[in-house]
Length: 146
Image (cartoon, rainbow, N blue to C red; front, side, top):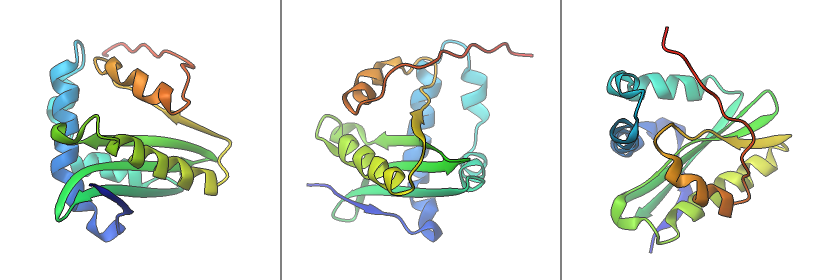
């Protein structure tokens, strides 16, 4: 059974292989933004995360194996689940829910005004997961490549 714990920020590199797995999923499923995901780096993403007012990373492990992670942050009083990924063999085993619930509890402790999550185009199949956690659709953003 997976155990969820907060990751020490100095150990952030431990999630890089899982983050790369998420980026690969986004690349494979994207209809319009493959060029973005093909060039998006872990370092670039983590730099953006670390620019938040506050952030936390939760990880799930089976023994020594990292099975999933969830990054959440606070920016200007608003909370966000920035990134979540679970290894394929651990999906549908409540690991994702445990990670998200830890993130939501952390954000509640921060007394944020709202909590949001952004879903990449092509990854809409995760909507049900987030709706089970209480998230509801709010806006849809369209973008033009300059």
